[in-house]
Image (cartoon, rainbow, N blue to C red; front, side, top):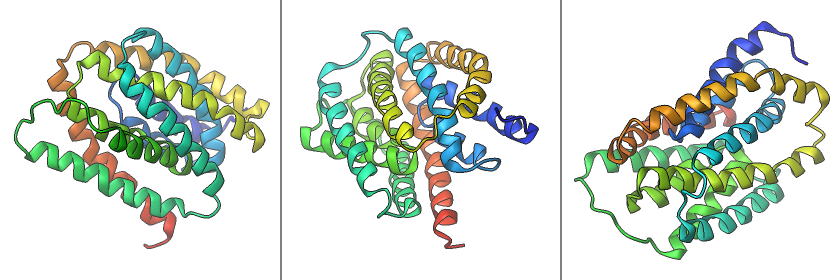
Amino acid sequence: MITDPLFYALAIPAVILVGLSKGGFAGLAVLSLPLIGLAISPVQGAAIMLPILIFQDFISTYAYWRKWDVPNVRILLPASFVGVALGYVLAAELPAGAVEIVLGIIAAGFGIKSLLGKRAQPSGRLSRITGWICGVGGGFTSMIANTGAPLHQIFLMPQKLPRDIFVGTQQIIWTIINCAKIVPFLALNQLTPGNLSTALVLFPLALVSTLAGIWLVRRVSGEQLYTVIYWLLLPVGAMLVWQGVMRAGIL
């Protein structure tokens, strides 16, 4: 188990951000791994965070149980699995930095367009092709750069789903995907007793922060939640671009 105080000084805010994200403020989780990466390697950080993510996923899925949109799940879930598989196969071939830069530009651009544009009416169902593009892209970037939520949001948000349905749809998808990631992490020999015991120490904070996120989301309207997420996409996109630039060694 990790005993370095610096690690916990960074892991505590990281787990809180993930908990708020799992509660419904999707996007904040992208800031967690860069924080932990200041103390340990990104791979070890992802391995420690995976059990915490799954624990928080189960809490949030229980809170939003059956509050998901089945047609959207039927599109995004299989598409995301294809993306995860592609990411696993191509991980050694593609620079994660380039993926993060592109994803960051897309996320921030969508946020800016949505905030500056007129109040859009619900678009209804987007095309299955669009859903598959966003789903495959979300699963792929989740495997390559540990963040896939922004692309799923780009598909779901124009539909103006009710607040709980919007959150629940994302939650059931990422719960299943994160559970599936156990296999590659076992193959990488990263789910060691030391990493698992470190994750276990952070479980109480994970529980409290996720419940806090759920509590906060249920006190805002659907329109307010969408506006918050549009704004969150701006720093998240900027963070992804910066992280990609640094990872690629451009600066």
